[in-house]
Length: 338
Ligand code: UT7
Image (cartoon, rainbow, N blue to C red; front, side):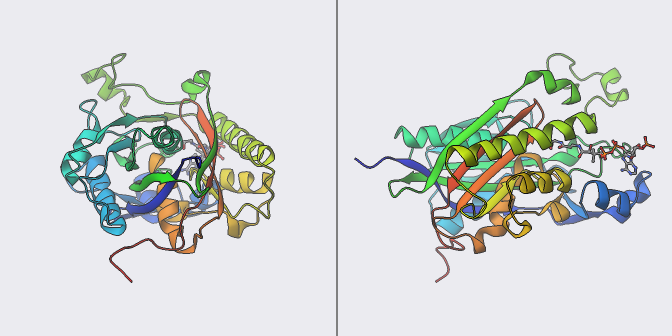
């Protein structure tokens, strides 16, 4: 019997309308477009401004578009995973909230948080359910409302992040496409460099945690930068070597979008020309769990069946890794168009 692999069979995304430019940011904190472009490579990011909207609202839009494009009916979806660091609330899981909003009623699911590696880790989790035959149609949606935990008085973090969500459909494949391999890592000793201090059981919300601004992202940029550059590139190169892939046989690097310098360094270590590296950080910033599916959404028109993709991430935890994926279809999948 042919081996069952887990293939991505559709992709969609949602980004909010509001564009927060470097010019506007430089009126909020002491920064410049030149500094942000040189050190990070972000020109603008999207912000979910509307009152009363959370991550599930962006995920809802992405998943509805995914179901429309793929023609999958909500009844057929048998699992929904939400991944990210900004759930609507600590409980119930945002997966439950999204499932309800999009009418997915015959599925189970849950949330996964692996920092900015959430999508990579969750893709691997979803693949296990497909490969074992336990599930047949999984919606994986990754995204974050990073603006809800970003301190817009802190110039060292506020230029970095944006809001957005992307969703993929994952189905069984017996033709040799889909997820080929995953190399995933965690190192909890890195947690001191990047975290949100309050709002959990250790430091529940109080007047003091609010006044100390502990509900916002805390990041020591340089140690995170150093670890991201070496570990993302090391793992991507290890994946290449393990599978005998070269800079010619790899079609695309799909890197986490945290800093253009980290992306460039990873692409260079892999020997890839810039045109094989997906980059949309300039327009969206770091949407955390949203970066990878938003890249796949943006590049879907150019992707071809059989393309070799390396997905690579680094995030809070520390968490990092790479996935080798063979793309399973040509161009934009939209069953409503001829
Ligand atoms: O996705 C999760 C993983 N996260 C990441 O991968 C992020 C990794 N880290 C980074 O991307 C970079 O470390 C940052 C973009 C956060 C910072 O860049 P950097 O080149 O490491 O700058 P730095 O922290 O060393 O700061 C250099 C200087 C400092 O001034 P002094 O001390 O040299 O006078 C900062 O105060 O730049 C200053 N600075 C700024 N200046 C203008 C910091 N932020 C800003 C700013 N505008 N926004």
